Amino acid sequence: MNSFIEQAQRRIRESAAVAPGEHAPTLPGLDKLSHARASLPDATKADYLSGRGPEDTLAHLLNDIVPGFNGENRSGRYWGFVTGSTLPIAEVADNIVSAYDQNVQVHLPNQTISTEVEDAALKMLLRLLNLGEPEQWEGRTFTTGATGSNILGLACGREAVITSRLASSSESVGEIGLLRACMKAGIDEIQVLTSMGHSSLSKAASVVGLGRASIKLLPFSEAEPWRLDIDAVERELQRKNVASIIAISAGEVNTGRFATTGVEDMQRLRHLADQYRAWIHVDGAFGVFARTLPLKDEFSSLHQANAGLELCDSMTIDGHKLLNVPYDTGIFFTRRASTLNDVFKNPNAAYLSSGNTSQIQSPLNIGLENSRRFRALPVYAVLMSEGRLGISRMMERMVITARAIARAIRSCGDDYVLLPDAGSRLDSFDDNTHIVVLFRAKDDALNKVLVQRINEGNEWYVSGSSWDGKPAVRVAVSSWRADSEDAFNTVKRSLMAISQAHRDSQS
Image (cartoon, rainbow, N blue to C red; front, side):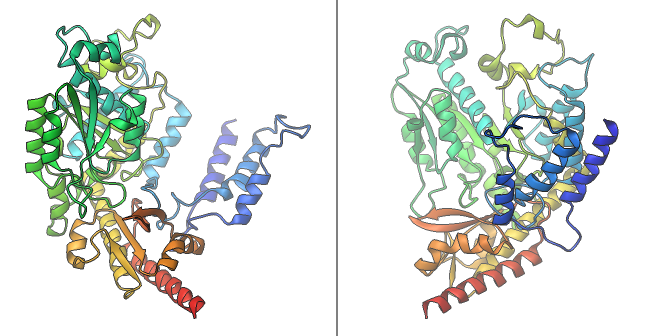
């Protein structure tokens, strides 16, 4: 069996390898998808669920299934969603995770080092992102991603804003339930105040019992809807018998822009939250990594937009985005471990007791899952391998590549327009561009099919979005393979060919 695993690993690597100077396709061909689909088991056949054995199954996976995968990890031009690639050291660490299959759910310091590695990785992330010392963030854990982390954030916020209004300190939502706790606290409504919050925020609000309708958008203006209107926040916080969670996007999914503009915004929000017993949750899935960029003038706007985020009560981060570790890897931080424990503790399971006397809590008492993959190890490996400087350089390459794409779009004459601030100078646009570029074709007919035209060319991949009620193209650079010169040339050549082909079809 060991020799089979060794040979299989070699064949997998050969299959996934990309030669230097070459670019993997961003999408599989339709023929490959059709072949993969046809190879799936047929329940009408007599051999359905008949075991094929390891060798034949491996051949099936590599020859039939793998060619039907997209190129999000292998291509430096896969710019859809915010889909990070996987650094080689992270892939190696993930293979170790599978080989040793640690269920990191109970802190057992005399039996495994895994929970201590997880804790070390979380502490390193706090310092990497300049969020403060670990003692300031007692509640810290790994989750599956933004949705899981936003569930934790809203659950902790719900717990805190209600408990602060209960007469008895021994009562909590986790113990007596949401309806009973709200009645005792005199709360008629819990609202989540945000500006262009990620869709997972609404899902999280539904899961924790607040309801999707609790999400209240407070845009600063029509021109800057991603910014949070803090005056409006203050008015909402003054509503009688209403408890509030303030959710800050860092950054907004369509534009990559930030809900706050500097430390003054965060200081004011912190003051208001303390005054009105509100909770501040930051969805920093990818934007918070701008805090690792070098202290250069070209990144000053991004550093300013990130200033003060450490004043929040909780924060979500996605490692599988810009940190370039495998799916699924989310991270959650909050100020007090007791808040997490009040919501997520796993009572009455004596067989899971760790006899823990250290400061590391068993993960099953501070998160969603009782069974957990050791997803911390690839994060730990990347932090150990790259260090602060290596990660800073990787983030810099991503931002410079995104800005090169913006320049390429502008260089195509009047055929395309950058969004959201179409009339701004390019240097101003550059200053505010992190890793997301949004644009559209000026010709409405071309604009309707632009995403399709780009993706069917299979040189670069983008997501379809919308802005001001019209289709838009969203580019998100989140791979360690980012190459600004290649991106500029590829995008310019492709867009000019697409616009020329469209003009030819109209004549």
